[in-house]
Length: 375
Picture (spheres, helix red, strand yellow):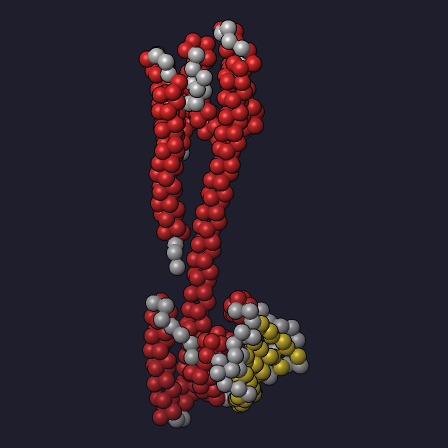
């Protein structure tokens, strides 16, 4: 499972690739178009220089925009391209001098912290207004000049601004998606930590409680039945060794509960505590449900030994479920059992259900996984 740091590193790498792609695709269109405009529109070296200056300003803006650093050159590039368009209209008769401005302006406007719409309107208005000045310095047909210098440039500026607004929305959506992925990764790590802590509690808490019971029993037997006391101590030693092994397996994600083993372990523990045990097998438990049902049995066994004064326990196994019923429950109110609450969430995550109930001193724990079938 990926950590948030790994996700962030992948996100940074993806943004780097996206940045390079942006620069490549933008310049692959911007530069050839600029060359064509210069070739067909420039009538003198002054016009060539003017159009080249506007193109260089727009190239600089594109590169810094792709590096998320447009603000450092925004005013400079905007001022240069705005002056290029003004000079092109009033001095050099260049109808395509607006090209740089319609590249730089649409890059800047969507990134404004506020008044983006006003900025878009101002940009289109400036392009059109400057173009509308051309009839003042030319004797050509006014309608033709307004169409060539005002209407077409303003329309290009409006379309380009609209496109860049959509482009900006796309990148915002991408950022939100990456942020959601990072949150999902952090949540997955938190869930894994909770699962690990819960399983560690299952192992250590269960073992420590059993060791406590067996130690107390060995203490009673040491003077009246030394052989039995020695046997209990050997079982404690074996139990501690098994717990160390299980803890290592948990740490290295190798631990798998076995329902048959948990069933035998629960039977031995109940009998050692003087509790009668009856096991009813209605069907063979499906292997896909075995591990989770084993966790339910282990946690329930610990709860019975710790919280009840049970005399009898009945364990019923089904193909996709388990039911544990014990007497000797204290009081009439369901106790707070945090271990079972955690397991209820795990079972629910597998589209199953874990229920507990208490009535007349009888406590019932039942888990059912409808997705499992009979082997």
